[in-house]
Amino acid sequence: MKAEIVAVGTELLLGDIVNGNAAWLGSELAEIGVDVELTTAVGDNIARIAAAIGQACERADVVIVTGGLGPTQDDLTREALAQLADVPLISDPLLEAGIRNRYIASGRVDFPENNLRMAQRPSSAEALPNPAGTAPGLRMPVGAGGTIVYALPGVPIEMQEIFAGWIRPELIERAGPGLTLLSRRLHTVGVWESQISQALASLDAELATVGNPTIAYLASEGQVRVRITAKALTAQDAELMIAGVETQVRSILGDVIYGVDDDTLESVVHGLLLGANATVASAESLTGGLLGAALSSTPGASDTYRGGAVVYATDTKTAALGVPAALLAERGPVDTDVATAMADGARLRFAATYGIATTGVAGPTAPADKPVGTVFVALVGPAGSVVRDLRLTGNRGRVRRMTVLIALDLLRRTLSELPPP
Image (tube, rainbow, N blue to C red; front, side, top):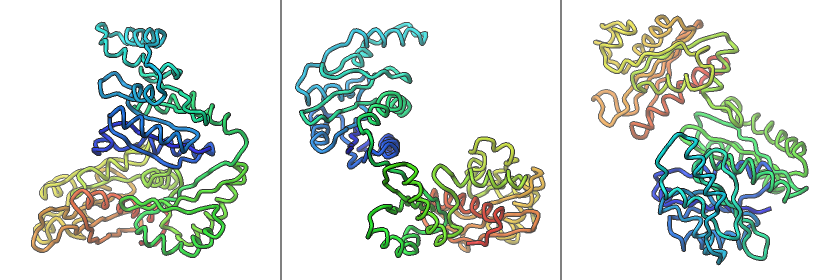
């Protein structure tokens, strides 16, 4: 079964919103063996929305549209679907009553009449209940080829609820017995996409001759995901195919792989700390609290993260962490020994097993002796201290974000007794 996704909203084209709905739908559809062959974004214009959906219907068995079902004048998906099917747009009394009742149940008194736009539907479409919101979804057949268009609200939780409750079961039933498509994502940190690709070139070429499984590379800032995808008659067969390739990838890439699928670097570090019955505290100058936010982001982080100090001004490094004033006067705040003293101060003051610290120059300006991107990350623990001396590139935001990744990876490697990169 072939599917296409059409995302409606001028805000997507302007970059005001990232199209996370398409990513979520792609993953969900792949899981049930439905191939997404194309995703399109289109602005708030009836004719262009209708054209985009119509073109998708000519190619796909299933078209899922997100966005444009709200109450405002720029929510035009209903009108576009009616134009595409050449049917009138009608007001559904049941939908209207449901919208009014939901509004009253929320405790609000004045009912905005423009909410009733959400009770409209093309006459050939049926409404799909929305347990998480007001705007119903729509299901509409298009053309003689059996293509079904599903229109969903753009609000992610509403889109997900309608898909899970109504569309996913129907697609599984429509697809019947067939190929299962499964993927596994291996997460790496601290290496370039080109390095990963080069290291796996021979394996990639070998798999290309067969065509199944396949490997793809998904790069983001400081991290690369290696996605292994397999098609098979059953999920068990696909898992076995993936497992064989995964073993080879792991043997080639080694300890730059830190996790799989839904793992994050933060959650992996949290798990390692739990396993070691250890805790960590942070001291931050350069990153201004970003490292503490990362260390506290995993549920249950209070068991492993003791707390942190953001010591941006030089004198606060002494006042809050006990960094010797003489050391700061002699070396300045961006220094190996200063970073180590910050980490040790955090460890002692928060009674943690480990202390980790960041200091550096994020830019855009820099002192004469320290160029932008000069960064020190220090970790102090029971076995002593280790410092990463870095020269990072990019703007201020990138330097800070990369520093957090490097700090987390340093902690991961220490807890796993892995060598430095």
